[in-house]
Length: 459
Ligand code: ARG
Image 1 (cartoon, rainbow, N blue to C red):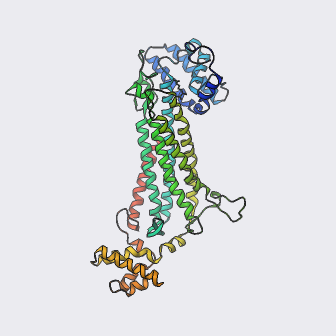
Image 2 (image 1 turned 60 degrees about the horizontal axis):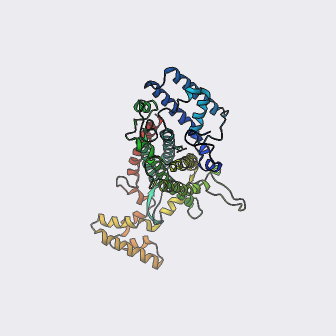
Image 3 (image 1 turned 45 degrees about the horizontal axis):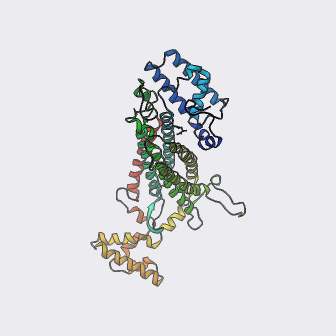
């Protein structure tokens, strides 16, 4: 039996049902649909549309449905095209003619999107909390990294030494923007569409403000057409998750790279690495690779859903049912990825020795030599050319750069001090820069941001 038996005669074609049902996907909205149903019933009662006794029957029936769903004794019927239909059908079975009042002044169009907003609010908070947990791991590792330094890269060529803490926190700040974005998306989506009906509101004296407050939404919709047609919040959530995924992919890629024999900057804990079915020697960074690989899927969910939305006329169209799978998948993937990446990162062993050795290569002090000359009055462009020339001849003549520096009249033995291990990185003093002074300050700022977000999200 369908919900529209008055207008449409007979049973729907099996192929129509097979193609249009969404129950297996939206079953996970049951809890949110029940919350929406209860608030709707209380609203109908407050407005005097149903009597107190009737509200009681409906709320009791909803409790029973909740229990049946929880205990997995709820019997779905072939006509239950989605979870919303199933719940209303069952309430009507339990509550008889009173049950048939549940849908008064409501359409699935406002009902579905109300449940989806409740779900999205809760899940984005959960994801944001998991991001904060990852930031805490980065913070701990950065804190413990002390004065360990490694080469900073541009174009994946060694550029200048940086503190390991600085490098780790660079990922941490990108994640801080992700948390900001998730929180801002939650604020924007915190709107209750219930009362918009199919598209135009109702002639009944509904109470959308009261229902919004009852469900814990910050406000009600402003425009009923927009309320049922808008899925910006899904697209925004997908963007936030895709960009978060891109950030995780960059972190993952560095873990892959750093764990190679060629780099050797870190080794993976055994419980966070995988072996090979054929190659006995292998220890593979699969978590880091999937952190990188999943981003493609997350980007795909966003791009696909934007294509679904494009050109849709107002208001509700069945196309909008396609909002759930990409969102659920992106949320599921993040809920799996973040704890795994946390565990991986918390247990990697950094090889300080390899990092320092790579950063102490002659040429990584090139810009420090140029700045040393600038300190002594030479225009930067001239200093750049002078040092660049020295690097070139040391490569051509196969002699150490230090030797040429010592012999150069503008540099000499005093400039040689820059080649001492760790000296170059310690000289970086720009606020926000890679040296110990600014990094200590940055650690404090980062810790405060992480704490503030953690507190805001735990409320
Ligand atoms: N399962 C559908 C969805 O998620 C329910 C809405 C159907 N509404 C309608 N007017 N046919 O969008």
